[in-house]
Amino acid sequence: MNISIDPEWLLRMAKKEDNQILSVGGLVSRIGMNTDAEPLPTKEVIDWSHKFPLHAMRKLNFSLPDGVTDIDTLLEFFGESSFELWRSKWESTAFALRQTSDFSTSWEPIAAWLREAEIIANDIRLAEFSEEILRSSLDALRRLTREPVDVALDKAQQICALSGVALVIVQELPSTRLYGCAHWLSETHALVGLTNRYKKDDQLWFTFFHEIGHILMHRGELPLIVDNASKYMGDDNIDKEMVHYEEEADQFASSTLIPATSLVEFLLSIDIPPTNDEIHAFADSIGVGPGIVVGRLQHDGILEWHQGNALKQTIELEFKSED
Image (cartoon, rainbow, N blue to C red; front, side, top):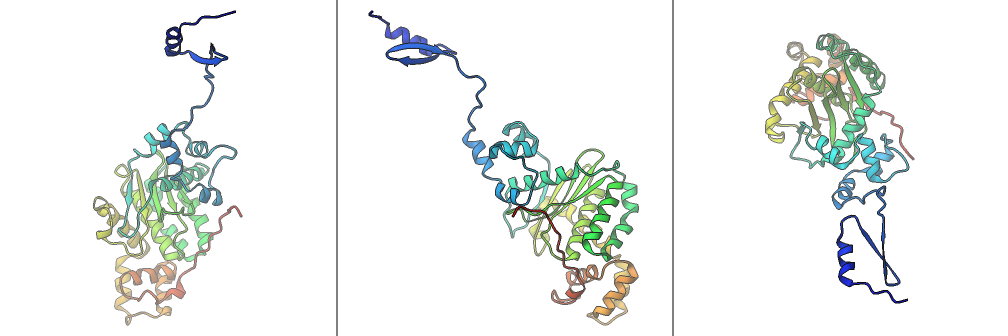
């Protein structure tokens, strides 16, 4: 049997919307499209997924799902159903990044670090935020600097939770060079996040009180501040819009840990530089760890950077990671 088919008719059929053309032995049939098939990710989405250090995130036991593609892993980790929703939330988030001239920082790893901090914070039972309770807890928090760091951080987390602040420590991801953040999770709950970047107690506790300063003083102005690490922090290295806020947070941390009048009285009573015994006695008198005093004296130029370090605690926090 001979079948004569007009080629122009075939062309019109092929162009018809919602028609799929299949040629078998010269004949043409219409087949239905599988509407349940997942669309292939675009190059933009693939490139986006490559910006995250997924290997490091898995090694550090970030809260990642198993058994799905890298793209789906990231979307589920961030709690978003699409790349577009992730972008609208995370790239438009109002945040202040303490950026130094010494380092370049990629945003995607920072977002991953922040998200992990949020996930951990969500597992901490928090009271509603109370500035009064947090301020009344400052002395108890500063006295924790006298205890072993691992024990003190557990106690600090409990104290902070009573005032509505989640204190979490998340290991640093490659390329972030972070040492902390202050983040309002909601109207009633805040987050202070720290990293394991620094290895001495004076640096960790100064960072902690710096972030607490942001929570207390900059609520409503800066819902998220990510503090970037630098060996030497100076106004010439900080985003000019952030200088005021960072100076306030630095001053808060300094005066909370070591009141200025107490430090002046101490320095006037001794020969410069002070001995380790004198530093230890002064630390005892004001109720802080001796390493805190050493760090302040080094920062102020009273001690050289190599002096007094025996009085500092070395931090060795244990994190569970994949072998």
